Image 1 (cartoon, rainbow, N blue to C red):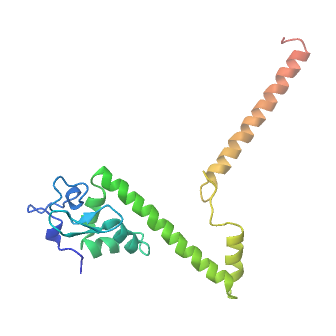
Image 2 (image 1 turned 180 degrees about the vertical axis):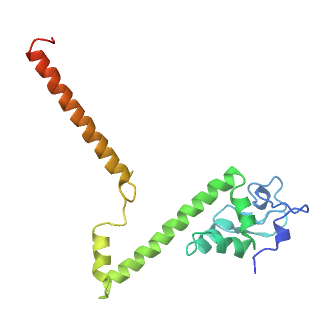
Image 3 (image 1 turned 90 degrees about the vertical axis):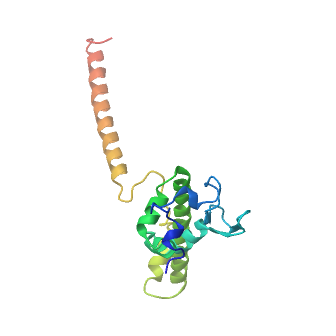
Length: 181
């Protein structure tokens, strides 16, 4: 059962509302259901409680990064969430911020699980402890997960160094023979 009825986030013509769902982005704010703020607030004119959609989003997407369960739970439809999240640039910016926070929370939960596994004497406690000790969870900036970019860069650098050393040797030989000054 979705949090809202489809009529709450659609116009009378059946078009999915986007910006007007958010109190901060709607022109008059009368039909707003959500706030972008981190805490719920009360609409000043209608006295209706506005739901902090970011908090709701993070809670429901930590265990489901596809956002499907969030879309179904809040809007009853993936299509509605897809239109809302890809609508206004300000909404998109907030959705990206919420996605990053959900990702960090997900990693935090995984890290806590690794710590628990490392503390007990289970089959994988050594592997978990080694992973934590070697900072395997940290990625150096600019590295791809499989190292292709780094290997390609190393190959290019090696080829350039080879070309330079061969060229410099030829120039030095020509100077010694008096062909160049």
